[in-house]
Image (cartoon, rainbow, N blue to C red):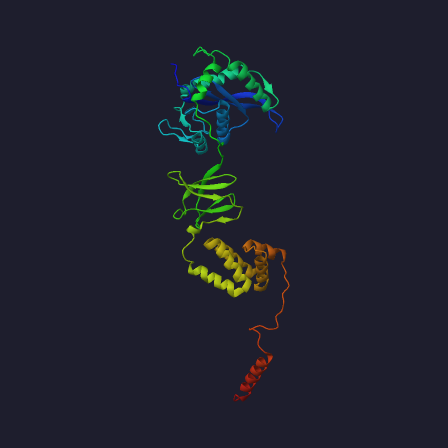
Length: 379
């Protein structure tokens, strides 16, 4: 049965085996993948060649097809391949989140076929076989660009000018009539991202590429879906998939904590820790206070690290290192540790005057008093 589709309503997409092309990394010939996107009304197809496939490559090929067509159909019918569909289900399918966002960016709805039922997208299946039998059969190419250019020339000079067997009309003429019905392309292309699941640790943060980002309160121990690119990190709600928090990308080892997520009061244990640091030295106390001021309760680990350095190197050496950190405006545990590692044997200055050093006369009087008391005792 022939399915008739209105202009601009539907597009069908599929993968097939592409031509043999020499791979630049290995220098050996390798079978490529042929991506075909066909408009269901006019049978106009876009055929693209790729060495490999992934969820991002699959989405990028869709974008290239939309740009070549000058618009996007309202519905895309696809197979249940992993790049597009995570959980195949005819009534409630789960699309790949990146692919779903790309389609949403262009205003397109993804419609997976029934499992093991490719006849629903018979038009694109025919387009894949047409390219395999006609221009690409038995050919080899030295580069991917050469193969794509050859396929584009065939598409323009032969595939678009042919009279389609079902419609009995020229494909290029029907595409010219259908193109005004396609959805207009957005001004900006889609901004791609990586995604994954991350567990919120006991300090309320989750980790992305060595940097730590604070989750909203109440999510400790839960697994949150996360999206990130070269500029932003987005924390999503696990149930609704809606955006909960967005951060600027941080360097490795950095913590990102909003002010509203900070505790209203400093815990008593933290105040005691800061008091012990101040007792160890003036600069040690100032550095630990700066760490707590900049990072809040999440900087307690850094303060404990400074405390461990006191046991390893002594109060005088650590106090000098903290003074250098404050002078250079780098109040971090990492700087103090590296400073001490590069100066393993700092010069120790002996102090002549100190509250703990008593006058020699006091020792003399104490010895005389103890000697007199021992001589007065009866033998």
